[in-house]
Amino acid sequence: MLKDITLGQYFPGKTVVHRLDPRTKLLLLIVYIVALFLAKSWYSYALVLAFLTGVTLLGKIPFKAMTKGLKPMLIFIIFTALLNLFYTKGGTLLVDWWIFEIWSDGVRTAFFMVLRIMMLICGTFLLTYTTSPIALTDALERLLSPLKKIHVPVHELAMMMSIALRFIPTLIEETDKIISAQKARGADFETGSIIRRAKALIPILVPLFVSAFRRADELATAMECRCYHGGDGRTRLKVLRYAGIDLLAFLVGAALLAGVIVLRRFGL
Image (cartoon, rainbow, N blue to C red; front, side, top):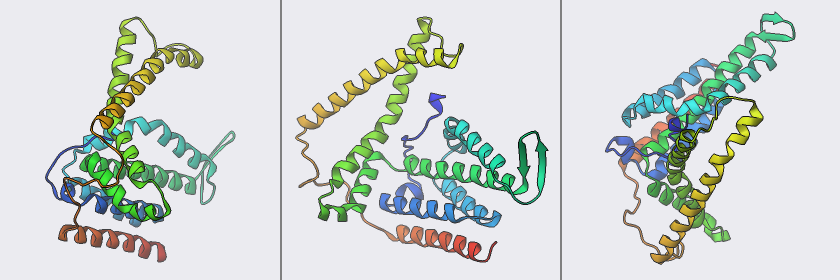
């Protein structure tokens, strides 16, 4: 299960999506999320799904990597579907058994909610798959730079978010190694009651926290040795500049949002 978590991974490439300015991709992700939450009908979801599929194909991201990242969220997705299935009433009564009732509106709402969550996760994965952590840091800092006028530590916040994304795969790999080592010593994480399984996680969590603090201390030492002192006076190896392809991407994003709004307005 841990190997299925792909958030924070970056797949290098030279595709159109990879060449987009990271600021463009962040803004397009916001537009995509807004369009996804505005979608209410089959046509709206089909339009957003077509956009997601097109970006995935242009970025040459394997669909297997996208579906693999959904596996850790499977329990949450199923739980959300069941809540909407049994607690949404309206339309035609389909099932009436004991205390459970399933209505046609509940089925529709549950399906759309599951689709929305899956597409939301996949859209977020696309950003990290096609954008390096350093580029994301620069983009976040540039987009949030107006907040510096009210003394918000923009550079530090962007750096913390980038480091967190960067170390997600590392911590997952470390956790997998610890679990394998504990299993080799006879630890059992799959049998027994819930309380027993929770107690069995202690030999995993303790060395994991120790390793995480050790890595954090090593990273802080390395940054101090390189005379890191925040964002004041810092220069960048790659200066972010918008290009014609970014303008085209903005037009596509605007067309997506406008299409969803029109379909919602006319109830399609």
